[in-house]
Structure formats: structure tokens, C-alpha cells
Length: 174
Image 1: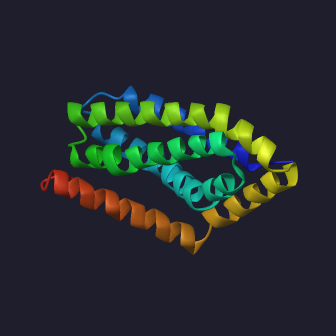
Image 2 (image 1 turned 90 degrees about the vertical axis):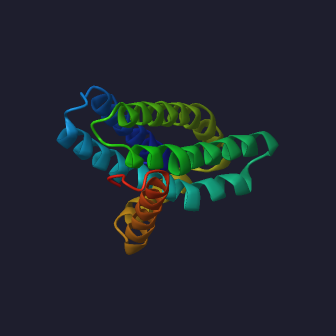
Image 3 (image 1 turned 180 degrees about the vertical axis):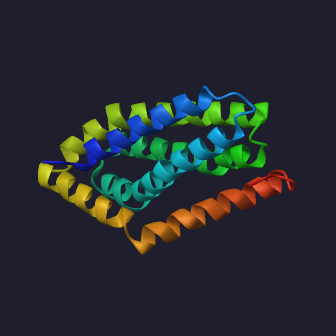
């Protein structure tokens, strides 16, 4: 039976692949970088927003004291990517070292976060939720990704990132 933990881990694997690809691009490969960044954000943003609005609150509600620390760390890692690194990426020219460095840092943060989730949070989630509940989360996530709500939240996140990028560099291509 499919469950949300397998789905989220599969998306983590996809993000690891995409970051590996974008990190191999050379500065002049602007079209490839634009395409890969769009593909990264198409996986990353809905994934993170669903976790923040559905999965993490459910996890926190059932978590013990130590598990709540796992939750708090995960939220802070999401914020670091959303509020610091993604705007830096969008504030940089795609053919610059700033872009490459920011993408590298973003990939490292995402890899670290995915590892922590897979080894700590998912282990705890298996204790906190039944197999049926994890399967239900998976169904709800699949349905949510196709909803106008997901589109709205994803669009809002992208606009917020672009606004923060503009504030950092008014001439940015964001």
C-alpha cells in the first residue's frame, strides 16, 4: 500500500537528482539552469508547503517532547531555504558564480533536510501513525497537488521569493 513517507522520499530522491544536474552546469548554460531551477521548484515548493500545512502539524500534534524538536528543526530548515536561499538564487544572474553558489547551498540544505526527515522524522511518524493513516496522507497529498489550493500556495510562494529577490537586488532577473 503506498504511503506518504515513500512518496516524500521519492520526491527527495528527485530533488537530489535535479540538484546534482544543476550543479554540473557551467555558467554559460543559462537555458539549462533556468529549466532545472523551474523543475526543482516544481517539486520543492508544493512538497514543502504540504508538509508545513498538513503533515508537520499532524506530526506535532502526536509528537512527544523529543519528536517536537525534530519538527521544530524541520520547520527551520524549510524557512532557511524559503526565506534566505531561494531569494538569493533568484536575485543572482543565472550565469554568475553567485547563482551557482546559492544553488549549491540550497542543494546541500535540501539534502541535509531530506536525510534528517528520512532518518528521524519518518521513523517517528511510523510510530505515531498507523499504516492506514500514512496511506490516507498519501491519497490526500496526491489530491492536494492537483487542487487550486496547491496552485495558489505555490504561486504565492513564488511571488514572495521574487519580491525578496527584488529587495536584495532591484535589477535581479527574478
